[in-house]
Amino acid sequence: MLDHIKANPQPPVTPPPKAGLTGLTLRDVMARVESAPELIPARRGEILSALRTLARCVGRDPGDIPAQPVSLRKSLKDASYTLAGVSKRRRDAVRSLTLAALRIAGFAVMSGRRTASDLSPAWKALLAMAPDRQSCIGLSRFFSSCSAAGIQPHDVDLAVFQRFQQELEHNSLVPNAAFIYRTTCVLWNKASKSIPQWPSLELAVPNASKKYSLDWDVFPESFRADVDAFLDNAGNQDPLSDNYAPPVRPATILGRHKQIRQMATALVSAEYPVADICSLATLVKAENAKRILQFFLDRAGVGPDSVYAHAVLLRTIARH
Image (cartoon, rainbow, N blue to C red; front, side):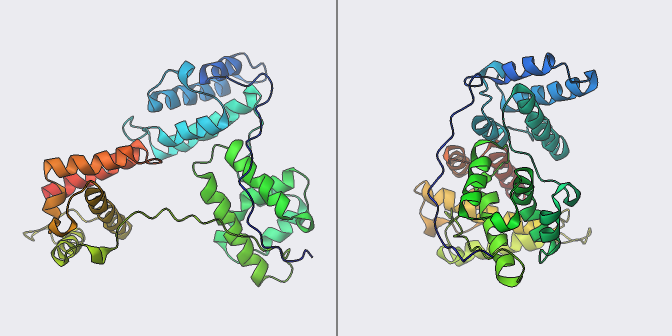
């Protein structure tokens, strides 16, 4: 068993691209897929269709989209799938097929999660000890990476986790590499503390705090009461009621609660007095709605789909 280690690893250094891959664009990748002799026509067509869908959602010509995994991951994250009419299922397929295309083009991209049957016996046995289903899912990518590299559970140390972090950041297409690495650390520590047979390595969990929303009690009481009334009405299922609205799921109500706080914070960030935000009507005044949406358009890391979701909620509130 390994001794407990508690350290805060330095950010990984970006590994240099492989020779011959620097400067490749998505169009170059498509050309390599078209000429790959190992692909049957149906598989080739499936991959090329996915790459064309990605370019359409990004709104750029394939020749203008860098094919390096780090750049391509950002393109996948920022793509306007909703506006392009692409379903979540198709979006997931586009990411998976793009990963396959990069492999064909010669990139050493990181594999996704594997099932327990694909793991080595040692990792399969350790996965069976995981405390809950969340841990099984959250640790499966790390287990797959170690199993594929021939690393045994008793060989895991801080350096192994650092290499895994580098792979996520530079050789994968996962939408949020930092979040996945942080979750892996949290779940590993949880298992290490509760399961005697687990390798006793304790990891420093990276700080993922990106809070920018103001606390609810900063806003006037009248605004908070109006928000509560609006959200309560979303659950009103009496079709004969004067304030009837099509019912929404509880998870949607929670999501709207968070979005409204974010939008009110955005308005304050645009130098609107917080004391003057007395009701939801304040948010949907034309000039204020523009300020709110501009805040999210300018905010780093916020994709078009997120801005669109805020715009849809503003429209819903305006109708209310």
